[in-house]
Length: 335
Image (cartoon, rainbow, N blue to C red; front, side, top):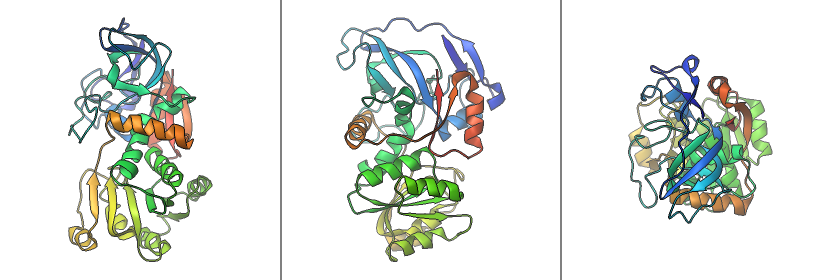
C-alpha cells in the first residue's frame, strides 16, 4: 500500500511516499479500513515539521476517514461498506479524561492515517455522519471534536449565550457553526477583512480585525454591552490570553485548546482571579464525545468548511498551504 513517512529529523521537504506491506485481514475485534481522506491540523504540522519528536519513519496524520472493507470475529458495531472516521485518542473510550500525552495518538506516538489501509481495534473508529464525503468526515477527528467539547461538553453552551472564537482555522470555524446551531451569538477575530466577511456569511454576529484593533478584547466586551462573552475558544495561547480574559465575562468560560503563539508565557493570574473565570485546558475528546458529536451533526445539518484538497502525494504542498495561514476552515488530503 502507499503511505507517507516522516524521516528524522522531519521537515516538509523530507516527507516521502513509500510502499508499505498490506496490513492484511482483521483479527478478532478488529476492522480493516480502506482510507480515503485525512485533514490537516496544527498538531500534524508539528510532527511533519520536526517540532514534535516522533520515531523515524512515522506515518503522520491523526485524522482518517474511509470505508470498512472487512470486520473480524466479534465485531458488531460495523459492517463491510460502513463509512467511518478515526478517533484521536483510541484508548480514551468514555468517562473523564484518561490521557495526558500523545503516545497512543495516530500520527504521533503511533502510525497515523497517511496511508491507504489500516487494520485496528474496532473502537478506534466511529461511523461517519450519513451522507458525508470522506473529506468532510476526516475533519471530525481533531478540529470538529475539539470545538464540540470546548463549547458543549465542557462549556455547557445554551441558546442565547455569547461566544468568541479566535481566527478562522478548522477549530474556530467549527465552533462558529456549532454555536450558531445552538442559538448562540458569535464574535470572530481575524487579521483578514476578507475572512471576516466570510465568517459573517456563516452567521458571525460581530467581527474584529486584531491587526487594526489591537485591543480587540475590549471591542468584543463592548459588543456585549460591557458584560463580556460567556465562552471563549482560545486557540492562540500566551499572546492572546490577556485579550481573551478581557473579552470574557465575570465567571465566564475560556477553553484553552491551542498554542499557535507559543507553548508558554505569562498568565495574568490576578486579572483572571478578579473576574472569577474558568480557564480549562483540553485536548480533543473521547470516543463517546465523538459518537455524540456525529449524532449532533446529523441532527443540525452542519457541514464542515473545506478550504482546499490535495492528493496524498502532495502532502508537503498541503502543509505549506497551512503554513502560509491563508486557509479558511479545513485543508484535506484525498487518496
